Image: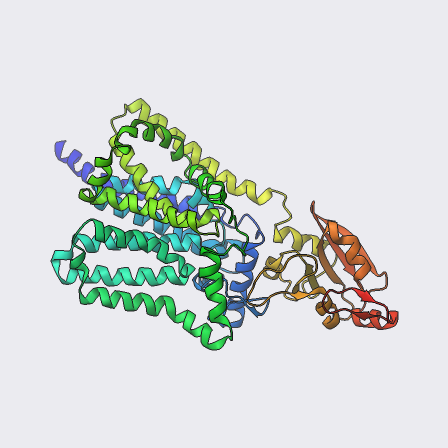
Length: 527
């Protein structure tokens, strides 16, 4: 009997890992395709990824056929690979992000096991998988989930290398892999990876032993990171004129010290963006963080406690991972909530450590915790389903259905006037033209054409209507400017959008009216 119990206990860690990995997998992949593409970000990225899969050109990202250099290609590769492997639907598009969520949870668990013992590993996986921010981000087609995976990989590999610095070649292998992880982060989100490599460098300096890192493997790792992360940038700089200046402004200057991208660059922007991200995104664990901080207030106010961090390498690593990136993100002039997503694994590790210290609950309390966790899992999955039924003008699938109901098929020309609906291309509308008329132009590498330029060159297919998608506030003015001689009907498309369905040739109607179009703004001028 005692022997059977011993065997059972030896299998307990494997069962725990299997349970938490099953949990993470269900949360990541279940109903991942229930929701349509939401504009603007998912429309941008899905449009580019579909173009890559269709054209076979996986190097130059293109939005509606024009170069789109706002992000490196790994995010698009992930989505295009999903389309190639699993077919043309939203689940396939998001499958790479779901896989990244599971892989990141595993890395968090492995790192927790290295920091505080094997029993901490499965708990850390569950803590991270249940966090609201990573869960939501993995269901959105942005590069932040992929970046978070590479950041977590870099920290895990750094800790493994640090532990083996005295073991010769074994440490060198981990260091080289760390260089590959850094390069992967650059391919995911460019120079933003440097913000999250900063804590690793700071830890190596403060915790001591930095001279042990001066070895050939470190040079190889740096070269690999530069080659992997910088190779794509060199390619587009060579192929596209002006790409170097644009990328520097878009991914460095425009994020750090310039506010012309209009992303919460004011003085209170960091509090307005990152405080809710941490508190809401950290649910359900953020509910107990304030009580833990209150109990630890005396230690946190003690200078000796902070000075003593250098002698507690694990605590120092977590502190650097949380604090240093948040300081940089707060100072930078471009701020969005998901920029702080790579900090969430560190918060999950800190939560795991605190849960370990609080372990000692009664069986009845543990049962209550399990019931609460089960309820939270159901709530998270219900959130995905609810999002798929939420009526919003940002849903490109809903807009595609509205166009189809108006007999505007995929072969028709669709012109989006100051409306971001690039996701329509994913639903078959390949003749999609995004133009501007009233909005302030965003500094894209390939800026949208003006309405006047579009009307001048518009070539509607014979017998097929042309559809204009516009905000309802601008509907009347657009109707006055279109050269279709009154052959247009307006239809509502959601709460704030309208579809103007027009017949005939724009060029023919313009010539018949004896007018010219102003290419700069699309206004009709008297001859």
